[in-house]
Each structure stands twice: as structure tokens, then as C-alpha cells.
Length: 209
Image 1 (tube, rainbow, N blue to C red):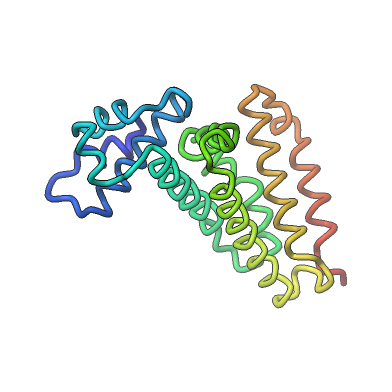
Image 2: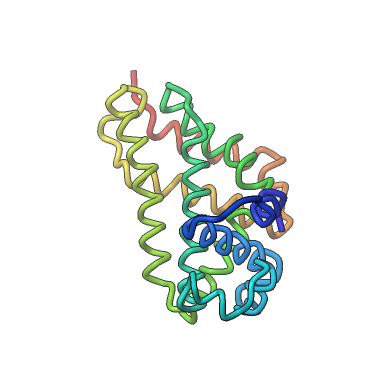
């Protein structure tokens, strides 16, 4: 369990129902990152949360409902990544998000979002999560597209650029880095290949003089 979630597990005082549900989701996320989604059981989650399996049903009606809460937690963490750069220059903000900010927020801590997300994507059909995954993916794309739209108004991004295409391209680029690093192909990042791809992507969308 990550230090953040471990702290949540030992938080003093009375929990609200929403706080308890979020804590249980965070525990399930950590278990998925460590052991995979297929081996996740309600008994495991309850034990890690310090409650009995029947008590778990006071918060979630099923394992699927817990997995949906995990997806919400992952989406929140991805949005934290997207919102973590406040560079006023939108062109440079996109560079930061796909570059240094992505690597510090996501790559250095893949267990916080990427590992469990890929586990849930792989198990999505069996776990009846396909529609839930799609909704959150589209929300992420829209959040990025909104930033691109802001850059078009600002004049740093070309006015004729398709914002959704840019958003999907940036997201796909981020996934490419995640997969390469999880596979141990760190040279994709360290030898400058990823930076060259990002430079080309951004040159294509930059506002022309």
C-alpha cells in the first residue's frame, strides 16, 4: 500500500460515508496494482480496510461497484496530472503535461494510476466495465481538448487545429511512454526518442507566424 493510502487507513476520528468509500476504493486500487484485478476478492479488500466482509456491503453492493469506484479514483488522479501544470502559455503547458509533468506524476508512480488502469482495461469486458472505462476515457480526452481550445483562443495553438485530435494524440503519446517504461524499454525516454516525437506533434499544432 502506498504511504498516502496507508495514512488514510489509519486516519483518526470518525469517517464520513464518502470518506470510507474512497478509502476502500484506494485500498482496492493498491491491491490491483500489486496483485492484479483477477485475484482481487472482497475478503482481501475487507481485511486491508480492517472491516469484516459483510460490513463491506454497507458501502458497496458488489465487487463491480468497487471496481467502478476504483476507476473514479484513477480518473481523479489523471485529472490531477492534467491540472498540475499552470503554465500560462498553453503550448508550453501541453509540452509540460506530455513531458516532465507526466514523467513525475505518472511514470514515477505507475502504481497510483497506470498499472491498475491497464489491469482494468485488460479485464474490462469480463468485469463488465467497458462502458465505464469509455466514459472516463472520453472525459479525459475532453479535459485535454478544452486546454487545446484555450490555446487556440490565446493564439499559441493553430486556430484550424482539431482539438480532439490533439487531445487523443497527447493521450496516446502518454500511453506509449507508460507501456514502454512498464516493459523495461526505458531507452524510448532516455535516448530522446519520446522528446522528438513530442516536438513533432507540438510543431504540427503550433500557431504559425
